[in-house]
Every structure is written in structure tokens, then in C-alpha cells.
Amino acid sequence: MNNITDSQGKVLRREGNLAFLKESDILANVKARMGGTADAIASSDKAVKTETSAQANPKPDAASGLPLFAESRAVTLGVQAVRTQGTALVLDVSMQNNSAKAVQFLYSSMEITNDQGRLLSASTQGLPEELAANGKPDQGTITVPLNLLDGAKSLSLSLTDYPEQQVQLRLSGIPVEK
Image (cartoon, rainbow, N blue to C red; front, top):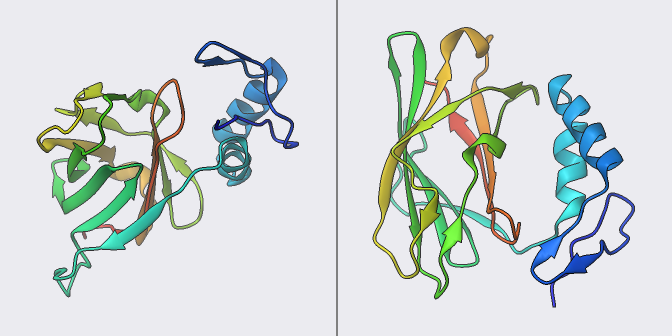
């Protein structure tokens, strides 16, 4: 059985399929994220330990390093292209669930950080809240306001399923299109 642990490594209380988190841990994590520190990401990494692998497509675009892919528990997230559109940086993404169980995501908990570890706000469009089991690829976009990039050369993206927090999708080295 996979247990969820707090920042000190203690197993959190479970009832059925729910895991209850300590309010103090949640508030500390939120304060750190709002302050733009990388500590928030480190503490959330300790909270849930899973298998994650990030891999590049065998034939990436040499100039941009795209596409990039991350896979966890048979769920794949890919950044196909990065482009500037108006006052935003747009990431063209795809997601696919090859597992036998549907997976839900809460995109408001998605984390995008710049290469200095600063947390950035972003919005999604076209990505489903639930990826069907053994489903077809879904396409969508992630949009980051250009004025938040502040000289960043690359971005990192982290997305966890909800509420189980078993699927950990992480991509780094996403190039910022100039």
C-alpha cells in the first residue's frame, strides 16, 4: 500500500481512499509558494514519493529541445511546442493515460517555475479534468504571462493527480521562446 507522508516522513492518517493532511503543513507550503521560494517544491516532493521519469523524444528539435515528455504510472505529459502569442508564452501540451484507471487532475495546483525557482502563475485550456483509462491523447495549452518570465531561459512544470497524488509528472528545461 502506498502511504502519504508529511514533511517529517510520518505516515498520515487514511480513511478509505482519503488522506488527511495537517493544516499547518498546508499553510506552510502555501506561504512558501506565495513567497516564490523553491522550499515549497521541496516540501511537496517529500510529502509524496512516487516513481517518475522524464525523457526526451528520440528525435527532438535540436534548436529547442522539444518535444519533452514526462511519464508516471502510465500517464504521459508532453510539451510539443512553445510559442509567444500576444502577451503570453503558450505551451502546446498533450496528455495521455495508458493505465487501467481514470486519473483526475486539478490544474490550479499545477506548478510552473522559472530557472531561478520562482513560482509563476499559469492557466490551462483544453486539458480534461479526468483522463480516461487507456484513453486517446488529449491536447491543450498552458499559458504564462510574458511579464512574469523576467529574463527566464527555461521553465519547469510539475503536475500531480488529485486527490490520490500518486501520479507525479515533472518536466524541466522547457525553453522560453524569445
